Length: 461
Image (cartoon, rainbow, N blue to C red):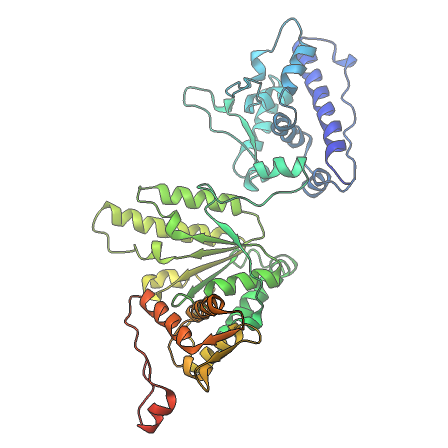
């Protein structure tokens, strides 16, 4: 197996040699007696080796990465190191460090890195210091950063923090999928259905294929064609239409057919009544999703966009700020972001222009409803009580999700009686009535189609 163990064993032994050299210099020992061994890596296909090969860190960057990683792998590493190398004098204050943890073990800080790599040489310290700047690749790629110190502490007393994803990557060799939490209010969605199971108009299918084309060719477009400096990062799509018209299923199928994980964010759970909490929740989510090859689906977007009003008080102002903050994060995200909303009118025209694609998911027409009924019936099942039940049922103006629910209701009623796969037409109609009432509407039973035709009536809904 390709593991990280060989490289990390060598890396931590190398780090101890770096400490040995700095301590020797600190104690005014003869530097000629000390020589740093050659830095080498095992090209073993491990995640750590691939990381080194990809980023080619400098000596200083490499040492700082190790400083942040060691406490997660060998928590007592630094205390053992100081005990071995400084048995009488103990740890020098110049090495910084923090013991603000449950086990009170030495945790490296920015000062640890600065003194280890530069000692008291100011020019050298200022060079190393640049690694903690916001424009450095370690910080920009959210690999490592220096924690903000307490106000009474000096600037470089902040602890070195390695992104938990990279802790996992450098140890187990993979990054596990995040679990739903307040810090990550999203869940991965899957589907066993295929494109043929989704009934959409030709126009909507064409627009969806454009999105799929972008996902499949993003890297070529941005890098091989060198368009990254001309086009904004990522792709933004707005799906709007009544519930049950296929918005979430479409996003799931896009992920399935492009081999991208799809994470669904219910914005109604993210939006907080406390001022500033919504931005915090969204920032945490995007920080976790950044640089991941994911599709983000923001469902129930009306929970946020519905707040956008004229500014009459402080809450209106903060509600508008929440919308602006979300769209700012959406525009900075490198992958595909889909916002699903029930009403287009809830979204400001200025915001609509920021989307690459705006797609309307209308309620299906009678022929589309007939196809949905046929696709979602149990195999070898039949509906008794009507000569042409599918045609009759397709006259009821329902979304695809409601049709599926009505079929499920009739199936359960049939199973309660027997297991012969015979659904009663009356049970299906009862399932439809429950779906209509669920929407706060009054159900109206239609006359059979042949009766309507004999009287010269029109189709009612």
